[in-house]
Length: 177
Image 1 (tube, rainbow, N blue to C red):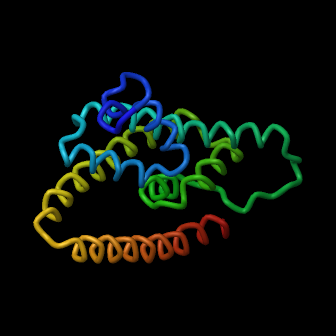
Image 2 (image 1 turned 60 degrees about the vertical axis):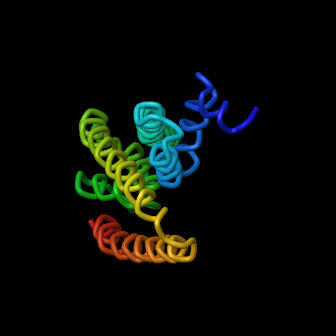
Image 3 (image 1 turned 90 degrees about the vertical axis):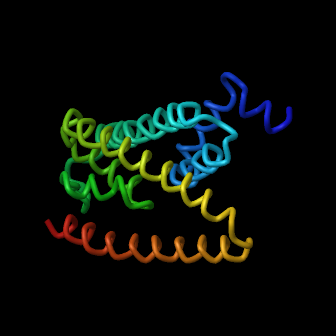
């Protein structure tokens, strides 16, 4: 099977996108955005399985937390007690989701509030990343590859720095409370 037929496959491509979001959703989102930007897939073809995977992943992390809570000893103290702001920030900062969303399940955060907060936030974040990737891809095609690579490295370092700062600020506050 060549790459073009894989992209057109009715079930395989969406399944791979959904499963890839469980491993690492931001690179999957950027990859799907690049495919959309290059015209290899339509926006709907990429967006629908991407959102399905991201929402299932967010809900699944909460569910894992609830399962952990069932077997957890009452005397055990979990230092992270995420509130609405921490959950919202975790949605937008790579690296915070797994532990924060699982902790929400362990701490029995309201599932309804969790879903009502994170599903729209997931849609906003995914739309932003997809559209931004599409636009950046369009611009970078006019530059030499070294410029594209330098831009990618600078963007990675910026988000890595931002990730560290936000984790330090918001996670340390939640642990103290």
